[in-house]
Length: 238
Ligand code: GLP
Image 1 (cartoon, protein in one colour):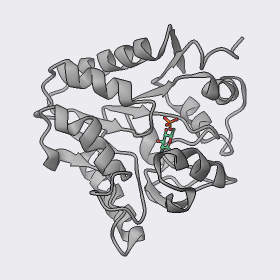
Image 2 (cartoon, rainbow, N blue to C red; image 1 turned 135 degrees about the horizontal axis):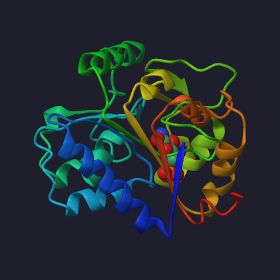
Image 3 (cartoon, protein in one colour; image 1 turned 45 degrees about the horizontal axis):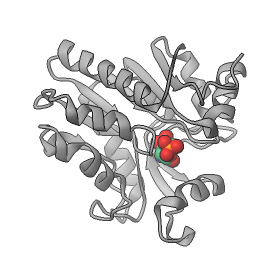
């Protein structure tokens, strides 16, 4: 796992945007794996400013809440439209987010995994990291599912994400997420983290053993992972 420490959030976002631009320049029909959360917002702002050509790009998002359709302001589909897709020349038909609005979410998860198989590869996967070490919505557990699956959110995740909702009761309790297996198939993975609140989990990620209790640590098995973190997130590293 290569680590790059940046001065601040802005520099982290710019560096990540350059990595995305590199993939767009090198690959004819790039497949980008995208993430939500507040961390990648700066990256998406940079990408929106850079006037890159996304016309041949396909995007796949990591996860979606169950019970929210794409018009719900807190759905990840809505977030992606607002933060990125509405500002670049990507064809929305080529942007995929798991569908959390279907009655049969198990089927929605299976269909999403099939889509990933059909696409064949993700050239670059962007990830944030939860305070408890989750990636996508792969929560710490004794065992983790490899493909896209339905997951129950941890109380700490519901609390962390409540800031985006009017009340904590409105935060969905379940989600569909790409599994760690789906994520590890990406050719390259970039993990972003910013701010003091992430310092402790970043220290655990860097210093501790690989464990399903810290899902991000499984990324250590991948040969091409770049961790881009700002000084505040890196502040507990030796
Ligand atoms: C959510 C998302 C994750 C994200 C995490 C961290 O739970 N499912 O993909 O990495 O939050 O969010 P933030 O970047 O806001 O700290």
